[in-house]
Image 1 (cartoon, rainbow, N blue to C red):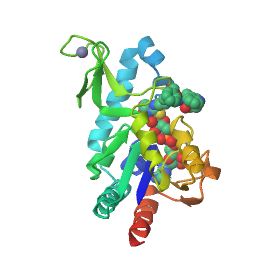
Image 2: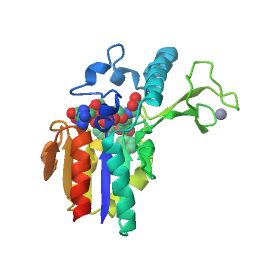
Image 3: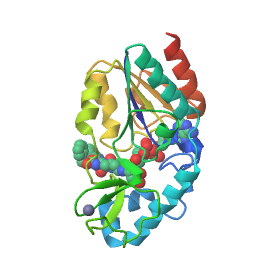
Image 4: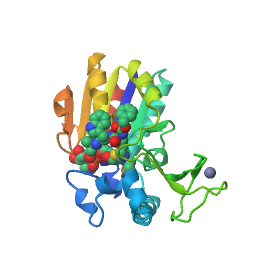
Length: 231
Ligand code: BV8
Ligand code: ZN
């Protein structure tokens, strides 16, 4: 069985990382992520955008994966043992899926713990604070390796290839507000896949899903994984 899973900020909410919309979004008191997660904001005030990501990077390093991350890692290992596969695509820039044990994670919006050089494009692991004078070995300026609004998501070919061979599409902890990620369920339905939504509340594209389960991911994801593995 090949399962395609798309996760969003809701899967990391119970690990203390902020969500962008819906319950818990109030975490963003000082900065509105939608306003700051843009190349224009970075060009206008790089120090402010660095501060926004530095605070999130420090918060992430102090955070831990939750039961939802661990359950998805178990699903990946169990499916592989049975000759199946899990493709885990995340909109999240945290590394909690990896720290929860997931091996193959596709970060379509980039990664908070990596930096990218504006000159040579080199991507490197980066766990410290970034500043306007942070430099690459080639002396180019460094920015968070994150896909901002208006920028092209990463690994789109790999994502569509995985959708082509999937038997089941599952969206977890995403509001369905951001494209092109929010359009994946429509691609899945067009291919005749069953679609399942695990979220705290109905997402903006809830009507696209055949199976919808609402509650905190740390509860809904482990019980859904148990059900799948019991089949
Ligand atoms: C692009 C990194 C062109 C930065 C992010 C139509 C077509 C194409 C594009 C557009 C379009 N309309 C508009 C656009 C442009 C734009 C867009 O979608 N804007 C929106 C606001 C309308 N899209 C783009 O610019 C994208 N680029 O389109 O390029 C292109 C198109 C196709 C092919 C090639 C090129 C780039 C978007 C990427 C932006 N970067 N993140 C950062 O993190 O700082 S997006 C940002 O929002 C995060 O990644 C976040 O994850 C993501 C999506 O939000 P969600 O993950 O869903 O999180 P959210 O807070 O919204 O929802 C959380 C959910 O969890 C809620 O439903 C809540 O109820 C639930 N929840 C809460 N607690 C729990 C829970 N669930 C379970 N348990 C809990 N405990
Ligand atoms: Zn460089």
